[in-house]
Amino acid sequence: MNKKIKTEAVDHLFEAILTLENAEECYSFFEDVCTVNELLSLSQRYEVARMLRQKKTYLEIAEKTGASTATISRVNRSLNYGNDGYDMVFARLGQAEDKEQE
Image (cartoon, rainbow, N blue to C red):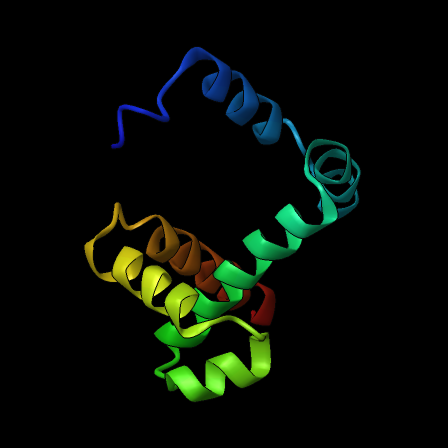
């Protein structure tokens, strides 16, 4: 874990996020905390990661998301050499989708 981000303030932010119970609460909270551009950037990175895991090409990803190849490359580096945060969430969402289909 990056020691630069592990601060008391970040702990407080994450504790606040963990209290959110649904998408509407997330919209309310994140619209107050982030600028529109910050939120769109975060969602774009997540979409890039999702598409990379689906084995989409950089060109397909850039066309669909509007992300630059630099952003796609940075997200790809996180997927391959990061802390496995994306994969943890993808796995949990996959499990949630499996439960919904039962």
